[in-house]
Length: 435
Image (cartoon, rainbow, N blue to C red):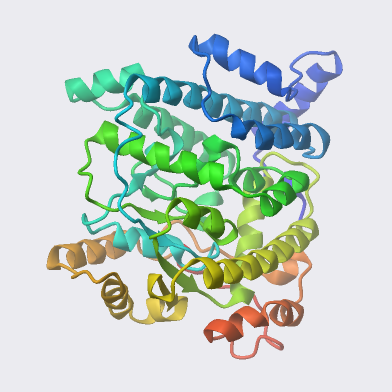
């Protein structure tokens, strides 16, 4: 597989033109942190970014983008646009926090947090539970643009469409044009129930950057440094979203992100009473699917990426995340606040699995919520965006070796194989539900 084979012809042509311009000193994009900060202040007319701890990971990110990302010209431009969006959002958020100190004073009831590896059924579980209005959840446009603009306030007061919704509509069309295969991996939609990793991105301490760009030094920094500041900022942005929406203050948030596997310690420092729902799937399948997810996201902006690099990077990352997560669960979270559920059980009998979740939460599952879950499943049939196909071998990985390295996780939760004999049969998936 070559990365450029996954790029549309107009994108390849545009990259060629931009490389030519760059050779003459035109259209050159660099990542200088001080210049980026100054430009954001100039664009918005605001000066305060809030908690300065975000600047350390931002500097690590900028250095990685400059030295190792190997982005194509279009990828560099898009990465800079993304950073500008985040900085502008921080400036506007801090202005609102200062103007309305009651935002940060809003109570946050103990959240319900889905903590599982990517591709282990976390999205399906998240969107099923979000059908119950007992919980608060984010929509995709709120995860990308959590900070309301002046135009958003005006639209809300007039009963008009929030301009952030229109903005994301256009952005998603562009994303799906440039990477049409992404929809089969993770269905996208402006009003879809979405995870809060987009909010963590505003603290510049999230795996989302790794999914978009080859930046192993940033990934290592993220893995080995405490991210409590990012989760504190996440809590403030949740308060801001709730304040703008006028949510009741007694409803708990329903949260979900694979990043919580890596940073559960930070999450529990900020939300010590969180109730954890932990789905588990055959790690052979998870690894192959994660590699495919990363590959399909990375190839848009990197012409020299190899599938073998993706395979080694993500197998190593999954193994380290699992070890760290198990330690954090053992030492930081009471057993009564943890509930484990198998992907296989959700797939076989989702209603029983969901009933067990509600028993763990000490909540009743209302007929209205159950009907909402059934409706969501009917509207989001398997493979409606195309089957997600992948094979471990495509990424230079061997089924037996992956099984041996991750067997400690399988044994810990008695996770069944999704193949009859993983040491002998081909690991190719013939399609899977969105995870």
